[in-house]
Image 1 (cartoon, rainbow, N blue to C red):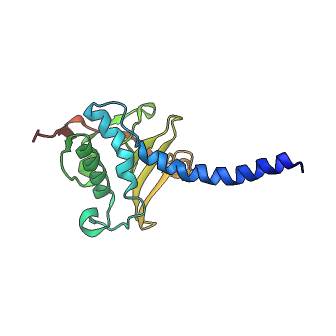
Image 2 (cartoon, rainbow, N blue to C red):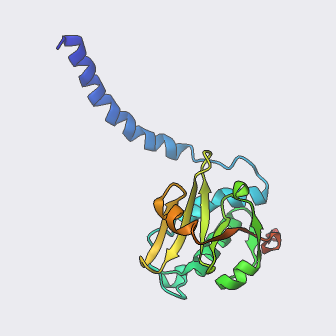
Amino acid sequence: MKRSTILLILVLIWTVPTLASHSHIIETQHPQKPVDSTPAVLFCQFIPSIAEQFIGMPVLVGGRPEQTGSTDNSWLFYSIYAGAATKAGLIYKTFMPMDLLLDNTHSIKADDVQNGDLIVLNNDLAAMVYQVDPSGRMHFVYASKKRGEVITFNSDNLVYHAYWLEHFKGFFRINEDMLKPARPK
């Protein structure tokens, strides 16, 4: 090898890890800020960061994340909605068991799905769409009794096509009256 090629390789070996280690610092110095400031849009923008906090949490029927360190789907969705609402300057109505929560939603079209919407199966099992990529790929979160923890999957995943779409009831969004402005302090 030529000396210049060897020098280039050595420089790359040294700089790439160094630059990669600095990228985390750069990211943390400039946290992602929501683009729009309306409370409803902010609510949707805060869903991903709130939802990701629960991934891997143990599943227990009736588990309340803040009290027991475990959750079920009803408490998972409540915790995500309430957390995102608080960060957006809103109040989420109240905790509701899954059947009552689903009674307070309305059907939406697949091409209208946004963060916080639910995919619901014929047996009323639901997962929350916690993030929609610019490409349209959806990321879901739910409390899996079978796996015993809160898990995620996306719309490119085989389980999405083989199970969720096979038993698909529809996409749903919580009704507007589930969120209200927080009272000024």
